[in-house]
Length: 197
Image (tube, rainbow, N blue to C red; front, side, top):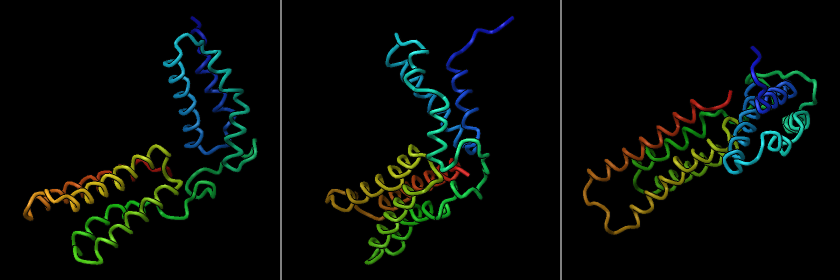
């Protein structure tokens, strides 16, 4: 028995086939982005047919050619793939921004007197910049990493230091710092595991 045709599945397969010169991870990301766009459009406009949605996206060859041009590849040139591919290799090892973000807080905790907080802040800023400019993560992961490892700790620490009603004593401060360190470490581990090759 013949299965009914699924125009979305066929369209995504055509894009994947046309973009075969892209590295596998970039090709999968492209197809996933298109599939997500189709699902979002279906949810926003339930009356739209799959054919209309796909027509709005454009021809699979055009989409693949655009993605190949962005990656610096001409159509028909096979992907080299792997970490050695110059288009995918970052100038900074992915561990560097993660360590800078994570170690900024222990640095402040150990060197609590001047200039420790200043260096901790500089580590955090440098870590955020390196994370944002890295090729090892998608935009969504970069944004999440910046929020969890850069913005939240900075806001919490600044609020704690500027408020006169903060808890007195060393124990609440230690618990707060350990909680923040757990957040930074968890974010770094998540980013490390979700990095691109």
